[in-house]
Image 1: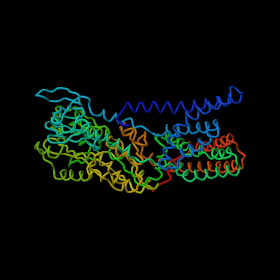
Image 2: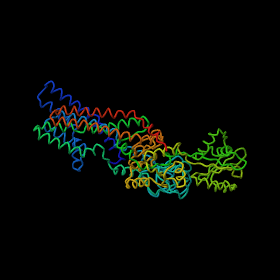
Image 3: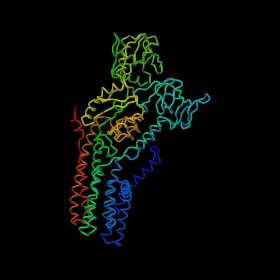
Image 4: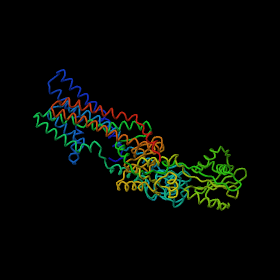
Length: 638
């Protein structure tokens, strides 16, 4: 099934709800009916047997099919064990005990299915990033056409506030394009004639004429869809603890059942052995602990889509982290103000805010935010003009104000003091964007703007390392200078810069190929392929795109990266509890096997004994609801 096929997804979801919700209820009703018919001697004996057999067939066919498939592949799993035990039980006419086992396994299956994310439904949302229509210039006239009708070579007109519908090159105009969804760059990129643009990115300012180079399924956006689908299909399934245990437990039980039969001469004794050893409690050991862990973390606003990620999180040795929106807030902020002699920082910010007051550029918003933080009065400029890609000019109180790049100011005949010119280069080395401020014919100051790194990021990284994560790397589409600055500030082990979505996915594939357990933390559409392929994909839910959330395995709903520490710590608690549950189930199995071998348990009593093991395991798992992973996380300081 293609992830981008909504009809198939909806059909699969309807079938899943029908089978997983109604089947256990119907099986229970059939078991009670069979018991009632036998207890009150209603109808012939074969009637209650037929009702019980119907329950076995209703819930058992999928389990039988899975068991046969695993057996044909040479795998000994819980499904194989249950298939053999049920087949023998039905063969000797013990239909109701078999139906009870099927009921237990149906409930376990529903529990697992509802906690696992089996479908990735948001890829359709990703495709909707590409606009449905586009404005095209044909024969000198601008016409609106469906985006699906665009062809290579078309000249597409993109106005401010519109998404670009094609991959192409700018032929005329200029504008600031937010291409974070594709490249992950934190700052809008100035585009002019000759610049490359991507489908799905937003033109924030200015008008662009774009010659189409790739349309429809050939665009970078469509390629991301393909990468996510491919990652979902190729991500290797993980053998559960229960299946690993079954590899040796199943042959042992079969041997004991044969011994019981030959020593007693009673086939029902052998059946009792199989039933009491049937791994229902063992099978529920993992999903019950996982469900309790999931509920615990959900209260802490961490949503986990499957129990297997608890097992993997405890083994993570490499953590890959996106920059924009993950390590940083994804918004520009004035980090430093440099004033020329005779000027104050507040005056520089005020002059820049006046000039930028009418601008919609993200850097302008950062300047105005800095003015508000300083409680500065910002009057309206008397005149205002934006030079797309370079800066703005304005006037206030009879003074001419110019804000922008060094070359822009010099082109306006403005003198830039050597100290400020040198400061531009120094700020660039620190990964910041330097914006000069001029009043009259003289540059009087500079604003250094950068994407703001999240608070306590360095402490969070140190705690993850203390929990056993050996290497933490940043993956970003931004340039190496910006990446180095963030890496140093956040105490990361390194970075890979200038990456497109397929590059991020390739890094994940390379590291997994080296045998590492890789987790990826991201928030953007450009992270979706890497999130899907990583052993554990973790997404920032509040700022993360819908596609990234659906492609990931764990969602942080409050965008607090300290929750990653809690998730890793909680995963260890869950793993320990699973092992405790397995130990409890083994005790019941050993005692039950001994009693069955002695002929002291009938098939019905064997099933009841089996259910007692299930209850013990559930009670053990319930304790995880009150576990405090935060306490462990807070004690792990560097």
